[in-house]
Structures are given as structure tokens and as C-alpha cells.
Length: 231
Ligand SMILES: Nc1nc2c(ncn2[C@@H]2O[C@H](COP(=O)(O)OP(=O)(O)OP(=O)(O)O)[C@@H](O)[C@H]2O)c(=O)[nH]1
Ligand SMILES: [Mg+2]
Image (cartoon, rainbow, N blue to C red; front, side):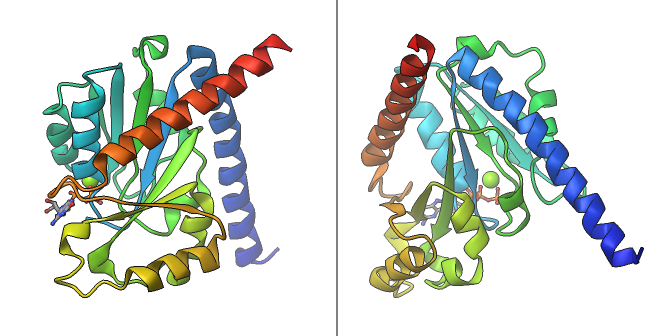
């Protein structure tokens, strides 16, 4: 057996093991009635800024919490904790993505049935997180206007693994001559029919629509689970 074959086998086993833990996590989340939303993007696309705003606002009406992954530092957890929501940092060391087992461990001691929304901010990376199911109900891929319009074409897998695309920092769109038509076309080329939301934490644009979208998705999921439980 060549070294390459062996490497592929080990990788397949790691992914298979992750899928097993993720499936169990998803079952736990559904049993507890918590709607789980994950965020993936390149470093600095604005995940923490959007999440801090989201936690602060959603906290007024329901029970929210977040886990955030980074290779090092507790900086993002400290920022998210300003929302007063329960937050925990996952330090991944050399690992460039979150894995289902890390989520499972981080949730020890948390009462899931006391939450309505749980948010998972992944490590900033457009490649590795795409292969790892975290048991979430909804995966958001963020792409900021400062990154250029062709990210979906260069990183199709992360767009394919996500449910919704968020174009962030739209307050900077004019300054960086962001071509929204091209960006939307590129997203649709990779993932036809993908919903796209434009947001800016600085100007507040799109934030109400984003919250409405989250509430609606949670309500849809509850309807599906309710119907399944009744059969
Ligand atoms: N102009 C503008 N800047 C923003 C916006 N959202 C975030 N930023 C800035 O972008 C930088 C990165 O934002 P973060 O929220 O840390 O991004 P992130 O995706 O969490 O970064 P990592 O966790 O390191 O991957 C910060 O300086 C933010 O203030 C926005 O809507 N508009
Ligand atoms: Mg962050």
C-alpha cells in the first residue's frame, strides 16, 4: 500500500468518524429543540462582528448562545461575551477547522434544552471547514466585499457545503468597487438557487432582514420536526 493510499484512508476514516459524531449531535440538538447555525468564511470576513450583533439583538427575545473556534486566543469569545449571552472559545491549536467532537466537548455542562439558538463560528478558513459536518441546521458562508467577487469560483466546496451566502461589509462596496452582479452570478454558478443576503454591521443594512431570516428558518425547522414527531 502506498503512503498516498494510506493517507487517503486515514482522512476518510477521520471524516467518517466526524459524520457519526455530527449525526448524534444533530439528534441531540433536535431533541432539545435548539436551532443551530454555523458560520464559515475566510479570516476577517466579519463573522464575529455579525454574531455579536445577532446575539445582542436576539437575546432580547429568546435564549441564545455561541461557540467560537480559533487556532489561538480567546479574543473572539471576549467580543461575543459583550452581548451577555453564554459563549465559549474552542482553541484548535494547529487544526484549521472545527470538528463535531470539539463541539460535543465544548457543550459539556450546557443545558441545550434551555436554548433556542446556538451559533457556531468556525475557524476563518475557506477550505477545511467545508468537509466537517457539525450537526448544524443551517450553515452560513460569509464573503466580504473586500475579498473580490470570484471567491465562489475559487472555493466552490465551501459554497456547496453551505445553505445561505451572506455578503458582508456592504458599507465598503463603493470604496472597493464591488461588483454585486458578478458576485451574485458567481455564487449562482457554483450553487444555483442559493439564497444571498447583503449585510453591514457598520451601517446596519440588512441586519433586520437577517434576523427575520433566522427566525423563519427556525420556525420552518420546528414545523418539520413537529410533523415528524406526530407521525
Ligand atoms: N466596514 C466594515 N467592517 C466590518 C464589518 N464587519 C466586520 N468588520 C471589520 O472587519 C474586521 C474583521 O471582522 P471580524 O468580525 O473579526 O471577522 P471574523 O470573520 O470573525 O474574523 P476571524 O474570526 O479572524 O476569521 C474587523 O476589523 C471588523 O471591525 C462591516 O460590516 N463593515
Ligand atoms: Mg471571528
